[in-house]
Length: 301
Image (cartoon, rainbow, N blue to C red; front, side, top):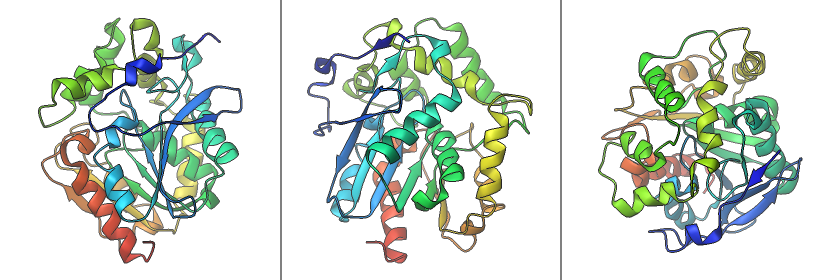
């Protein structure tokens, strides 16, 4: 496997990003970069981003969690951010991404009693981890995400995105984040999303992800996702949905969780207004405030 590593200077002087990375190691030796801030013995909030963003997406939320006395861990997925980037699209599989996260977070950091906050692929990966290691998680916040298991076809908006990725040789990553946001991003913020990818050779991760989502029951990733759903249907720890009001891709997916996950019953599910797919960009402090208020209500902080 040919591995690329983005030069550190690409991440110098990014706006609103004072955090230095902690480097973790996966079971097959890849380097995963993560923000790890706050007291070591504080309750852990695990922030998982999706495609094609990186942990920079949570920059307006991290201070809210730190002010509440929480420990924040926000890894960059392999192929994204400051993490190592396997150079071939075929290097990226759903199973590998789950294992890369599992080994970095559990074998290396040994995270326990985790509050998961997940969006986009952060949910497709994070909820697989919940399904396979429910003892590691104390509670879950799902925001603009899902866990497709091949039993249904995703909507036309998602297919339009997928087709764009497939036919575009050099993905405009920063512009994709802009297109998925309801607010106008500053040029330097768009540039921060482009920073992990000096050229097209670094973009195998973003290129690969859409076609890793199971669309049919016989997809190689369908059975593990279905197995995770079986665990989620017994998951009685607190489970909160905080979806936005302006995301055509994940609209309605929250009902899959509130209707099937026992821990979602009686929780103060909320709609984040004035936000599109990347609700962290549009209403990050509001979303973080919702999570902190919920945790306080549960006696966590």
